[in-house]
Image (cartoon, rainbow, N blue to C red):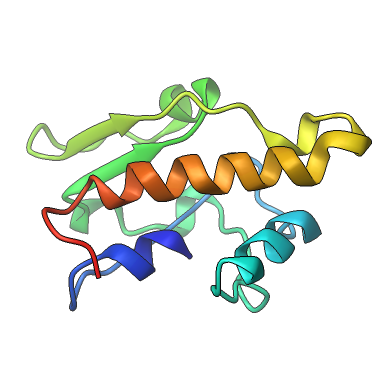
Length: 116
């Protein structure tokens, strides 16, 4: 996804959700518009992430911040309180996904001192 597109070479990226499931088709569509194919990815549970290896944890909504497992004090925690675009009315959903993609792209690019 976006983190892999902006991360320095050699950076390992993991993602997980509090309610893992299939990736929303609108997310796949708007990422494809940005030149990023996430169609082969799947949403993982929090238990599937190697937390002990993390140096930065980013959470995207209120409940995720609370549900995130305890990590050591040396881990940088970043919380981005973003609305879930899947909850937008059907007629506005694709626009909501695009806006969320663009916001996440901007925020992800700020995590590293350089971008590609």
